[in-house]
Amino acid sequence: MVRAGKHRHLVTIKKPIDAIGTSYEPTESWVVYAQRWASIDALSGQEFWSAKQVNAENTVRMRMRYCHGVTTKMRVEYDNRIFTIDSIVNTGELNREMILMVTEEV
Image 1: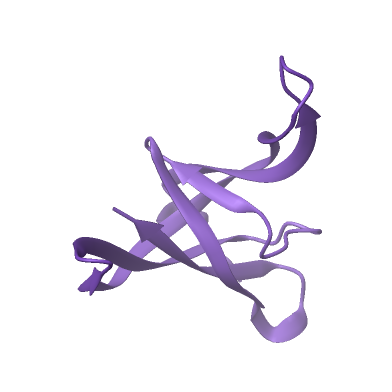
Image 2: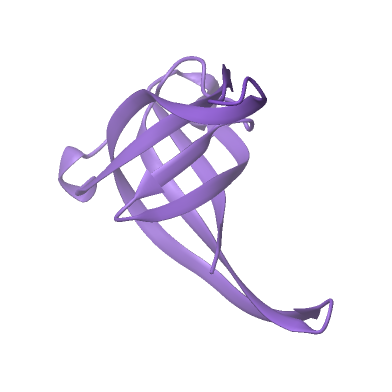
């Protein structure tokens, strides 16, 4: 059973769509797919050197009620932060709860 009290962060799941820009060039934009209450747990933080610049990366676990159709091509936004979806786990294959493993690039 999913405990609703632990899900205290309202997150927005967005999906990409192809659009046409003002100069008629193809651009990618994001539209809201769903909003869910979730629990957010930071798992690790790393700094690494890439192309002579320091990058930071945070791996986060988000637990929420099941949402049909979410894929790894989508992203999650929370508190002006953007997370890319690395993996999706349907807990127990019961379609009640899902766990998103996401990465935030800082």
